[in-house]
Length: 361
Ligand SMILES: Cc1ncc(COP(=O)(O)O)c(C=O)c1O
Image 1 (cartoon, rainbow, N blue to C red):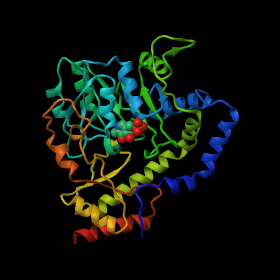
Image 2: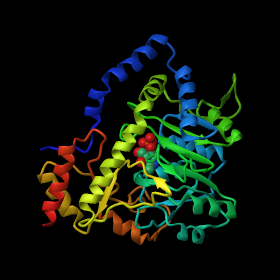
Image 3: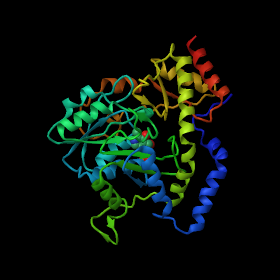
Image 4: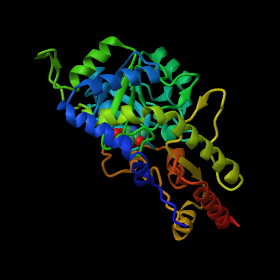
């Protein structure tokens, strides 16, 4: 049996009529930029997330970058984040002109709150927790640290759309940044992103920045072209009603993996009283990661590593020398993402489980 890692073709077959209707209705309106779908989606997202405002933009990366621009984070400022994220997180910080300062992570790949305060200087402006794999970081502690030191919190929630933390889908950051990239749980058919906030001034600045600084008829500042297309907004509206069921199914499959493999590999764990993760990816950890990945490949089971090289070890990193993140570095050699989709069949999942078990016996 062949088990893919990406199920987008299967999903597009299943959702074909929904996609087609969304495309047709929008194509007939002749209104393709900043029309009714974008406004409707922004209202629907705000209501789903429980935030006062949502501004859609053209990617998760822009969501981060524009949030920093809107909060006046710029050259000379420092932003605390992690080194095990997709490169876009630190990329957005450097694009804003600021310096990323990296903090190590816990066993669960999420920022270690105990390590944040030692990295705060008079230049620090913000903390960007990354809710990697769809599991929320310890926002209660992070928000408290930020408040104590007068810092902004900008959530990198690119992987955690729909996750619940202490009863909320919007975790009380100053801005939460989402990605609708095709590989995300809630996605469009191209690039897309959004920023949620409870701050009216920030919302107004973001609306301007994503559209050339235009406020009404005039540009109050220089901005960018970072608008979400009407077609993508229409698609996102169309698939929104099925999202919660999709997330439930991902969670159910993740729990099944945990039950079936927890004696062989390190599996994710969380406090159910605190959170419901979104399971963007299902990551196990083992000292025999490369051997296991090769074995699964030979069994036609496709896996990925998110991410094999930490940000501070990438060629692009020309910032501070000597960054040492022992847990991040150790985990980059141990992590393996197994296939997970709401559309993965029971037989496919059993085959993956059986293949992993056969490797270890
Ligand atoms: C953790 C994280 N941050 C940021 C991004 C950037 O999002 P996008 O690809 O929509 O620009 C991604 C997605 O790829 C991500 O996984």
